[in-house]
Amino acid sequence: MPEQIRGAFAYSKNVAVWLGLICHGVSEERRRQPGSAIFVLRCRFAGSRIARRRYFQTGVLFAMTFSFKSIARRFPRAGWAVFIVMIFGVAAPPLKAVDWETLFTAQDVRDHLATGEGRAQALEFCRRMDISKVYIEAFRDGYQADAATLKTARDYFAKAGLKVSGCVTTTGLGKPSTGWNVAACYTNRSNQQHLASLFKFAAGIFDEIMIDDFFFTDCECSECSAAKGNKSWREYRGKLMLEMSRENVLDAARTVNPQVKIILKFPQWYDNFQNRGYVVDAESALYD
Image (cartoon, rainbow, N blue to C red; front, side, top):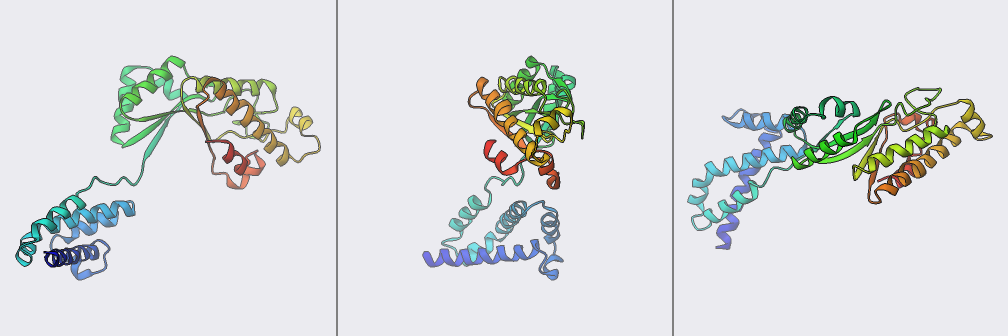
């Protein structure tokens, strides 16, 4: 019996290798055979190695189904056993190569998630796009979303089986930076207090919060110039933003929700991090 099983598996392996040649386009002659073009096409346009492997597994199952008579004829005592093993091994649940997530801005919350119809449309969009997680934003561009609407949307998507987190985008916070005016002056005391209040607000609703892109400063106003003293702008902004992170984001949020996780999403301005107050190694250690 062991000899029969080994022989059957060896034969099955040859089938798999043949299909592997098709999927990877190694053999032009093989690819021109009837039926093989389907596998070539699917493997060529698969978005990842995991997806290609899944199509290859499907191809092996297809080949095994149509080759079973030959296997059983060659190895009559082991054919069924090998076929069952192949069925369970090949027909495993599909492996997911990518998890898709999306963000509903604070304005989206106001305009699209405040009604049952709007939430249903948003959920249908998520289903259609295979989105498994949503970020529901509490603040952006000077607008703070309604707490009741945020909670209703949070519960609605969670009940539908999606992962849900909050978001805060620190644009329109108050006194703007003298540089890029989407950013704030974080030397300004009123802005600091507003920042802390936003994260307390968000932490009262969500157990995870993402900060989207714009948590930086390039301000050179009189307040910043006076506070900077003899430091370089790079030194001052890095020190300032680390203080904002510790005191006005993390500590503020955890006074309301001690278990809250906060994610700092770094933008793609890699060559300007040091000029805008990002201290990537230190901030990575602080945030979740």
